[in-house]
Image 1 (tube, rainbow, N blue to C red):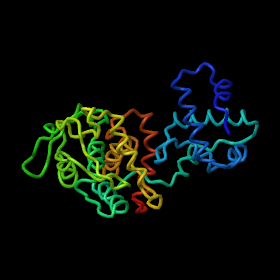
Image 2: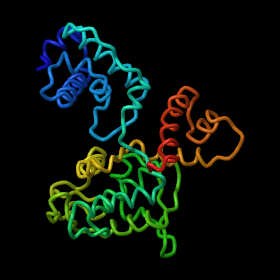
Image 3: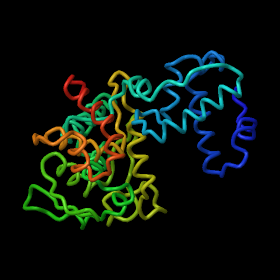
Image 4: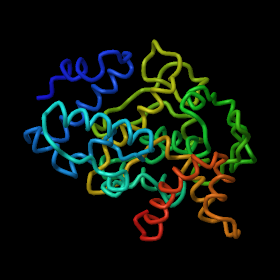
Length: 303
């Protein structure tokens, strides 16, 4: 339906392979969105155009650079097809996404994971079946990167009495209690679990030194990309009716947004964001739009 080779040759003949692959992802995503709808008609449909900005099935935020990139692709596509159409504004794109990618708190996030597990498996076991998903979320919430998560060894979980752990990354040391501690505790001794949605028993292999073990005996440990895949596979099991998904890069941002929301000082919102999120003013203005979406969802009890 969309001649990828012709499109790239016409508009991106000098682009490097990474850019050309990005164009391919954009076109593949658009083709999936519009289905059997004629391309020229779909490109005049505002909702379809808004959806084209979301390259992941799970909802995600649209940064200004990302918006400008997809806007360029669409303008070139309008020219390629030979139609006059209007690219929706960034505000329209953000307003079009009804999937919630934030949570009221870490406990609510973990409870959501159990809710999905219970809906997908008749004999769901909350101490095994999705404990890897829960633990990725706990560590991502604290600010660990996917590579840092993959590198964590069981011995890196320092016990605090019998009720908590200390975990450390390059940014600092964190104390984990309650439901987040429980998730990490059960993961530290995990040998097998029932996969979603099949319920098939999955045996963990690789080195038992690592907190996150692979399922391939020929692989000693996971890498950062495989950590992200744990979340993506889980998202594929979420019923559409829940209108919620987990986006890894939003996890720590979610935690910081809660801090901003709970900041009762008289500082301006931009100063709160700059201080708590440790960012420049330019980034703070971008985060502000995302933060306001979070607040809207929070105060309307959508999360």
